[in-house]
Image (cartoon, rainbow, N blue to C red; front, side, top):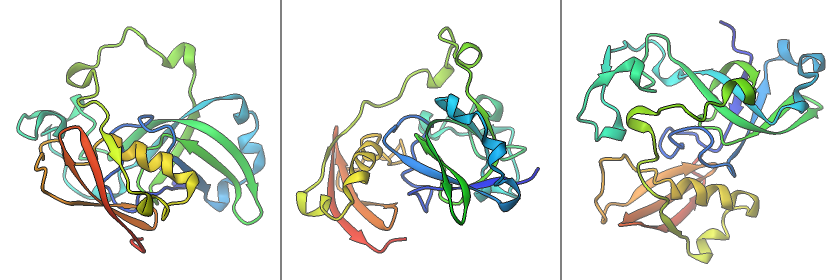
Length: 225
């Protein structure tokens, strides 16, 4: 398997990444290709598709042993299920699959073709093995059953960000930040309303706490990444 590209996202750390692709459509990332794969002809016709499949590597679990059963955070971290019934990163082969929306394809003078995608759930620097077009007639299954993860576990949180904090974030990234926070980045089994969490987002550290259905941003610090 060859790495064809790496993604550049606003998540230098795992904490805070949406739990599935497509949950925060305002969240954009760039896919930068390795020199060998920068031929413009390799992208001919891609603009005709609205969504793409990304096949990528859980690079942080590379070399770690897999387990036949895992404890999904979705179930509180106490129930064991078979690894093939989950999307755990600790797999026999650490391969991830994400569906993203294609925002645009640009020709960068130094980097060649660069894709901008929306809704990605990948950490910054994640290696990408392949990209395939999403085909609605084949890939969309309205009758599909989602097992224990059939529906999102929580409703979106109400996010409150003081104006003086919000002004530290570029306007084009504010909706994405709100969307990420509304998904509740905390581990799903932590509910201490007094605990202060820190989440890296781009070059900022977002400090917040959650009480009930309300997430309050306490501080935004520049220079995290």
